[in-house]
Image (cartoon, rainbow, N blue to C red; front, side, top):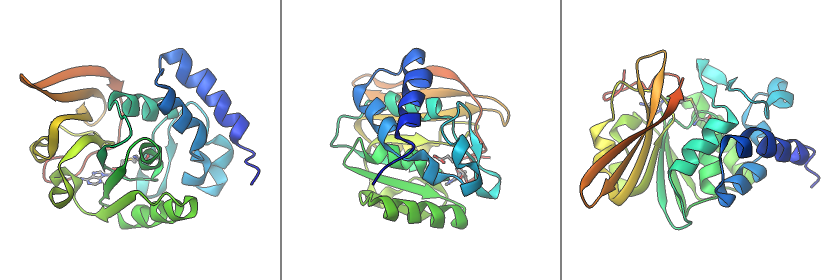
Amino acid sequence: MIDRFATIRERMVQEQLVPRGISDPRVLEAMRTVPRHLFVDDALQSRAYGDFPLPIAAGQTISQPYIVASMTEALGLQDDEQVLEIGTGSGYQAAVLSRLCKKVYTVERINSLLASARKVFDLLKYYNISSKLDDGTLGWPECGPFDAIIVTAGGPSIPEPLVEQLSERGRLVIPVGDQYLQTLKLLELTEDGRQIRDLERVRFVDLVGKHGW
Ligand code: SAH
């Protein structure tokens, strides 16, 4: 199948990701491969590879390509991990992750979004993604522990259930702050316990739930 967006994706990688320091070759390859335009409304397809977030249904957003790449790179995936995502939204971030690890579990609280994301996963034959409708701030304890957890909505603090579902050397990325601006935080479980680093300033939609807003 001829993919008329392949050239545009390559340009996105070269102009938006590489100059800003995304250097993991596997992450760049996943960004080059996953057809982002299929995760947005037909009317927005021509803008899907722009350097900005876009609206999806239910007042939510699909993050800017650079933010997706940056959060993905922070997880340091090698290939054999189990990854949990909170906030499926369009499904694009889960799709990118699915190219880089063994299995992705993704949780969304809005049914219509989950339904359309699942359709795209099937269309692309991305069969290593499982998803469910739930409050993701509680994690997905039956399927854990997870080597990496990514939260793609902004919350007031790091939900404790998520930290508890990390495996021994697990990593968690999450935007934490107020409802206007957040800091992307990377929590790593090490021999000495939890280490938390601030990555960059970001703006995400609200993480709504028991351990969110
Ligand atoms: N990763 C998505 C980004 C979607 S925006 C993508 O690639 O498109 C964030 C999403 O988080 C929204 O769809 C919102 O409904 C969802 N969300 C917010 N709070 C949640 C919660 N507690 N559990 C699950 N999903 C949540």
